[in-house]
Image: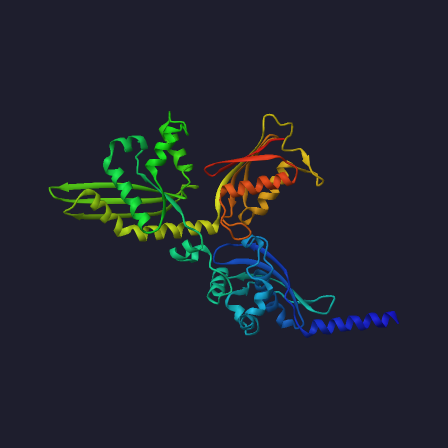
Length: 421
């Protein structure tokens, strides 16, 4: 009797499986980034000829609703509720074979029957990720990434960079020399700053910041280059804009040539560059305004767009973890019930929280760990913007939860974590 009951249950199960094919979640990331990625997908079907299409569709569905390790931090793009809310889209995608626009099988293996009598196959799938992401955006299934927004949309979404305008300096020059002897650059800086404020950009006054740092002995000023670099890094500006200007005056007429270059403070990466000129019968400061006004909105638009793209791909920082001189611990000491060493906890946390799990370890001793390149996301798991300081605070809090007392400080794009126990 038990044998008959078991057979009936098995037959019922088989009918259920034959009545409908199900998407598989057996999908692995093989490589590629940007426009296309390559996946390995295993799926089953009640029909032999549908096994490969089911594997391709399973790769797409897993990318959308489950996430794939190695792609977009392993996070799904959509929630299951979206499947119902946008049922028309998914009917077209799967039932009307629209999925073939965005993915294809790169090989043609022969499906084989598995122990349930279903046709099973493993295929290599190429997913046209960029094209698919754009289609999802156009059909309102996902919100745009920062790099897909206009400058206005980026600003409205909370990416509103703070800018400090600084004078261009040649090798061997210092800001101190320029501020004391080059009145033209001082005027140009002031006018560029005013123009940025006029179009709604938040600025930090360079000259005021410089003088405050001198008065407070905030940095070492025996070395001018070191002082200047520290000033920019600690300014609080997301971006600094270098201004160079050349004037030509002939009687009552004159002209100016203006060069603007914007750099990301954290990385030093060039974000945008613009050149402009203006001439007329007017004063030097009005010539400056004329030259700046011609390019200011376009320049800021490029800066914001470049910054948005860097937000999408993350920021590279250096992480240095050391043991305090008064501590009795080492980085190899096992902590907690898991029996992991302190450095193991740190590497594990960084791997989970870095973009794509990417970091490079430069070296390690029992008292020092250096990860010289950690790609940190510029948004946390809730979608809120984060910077290197936020990343450092989160790591410190995690360590304290593991019973590891730690403190942190930030110097530019270098995070210092000190184990204090």
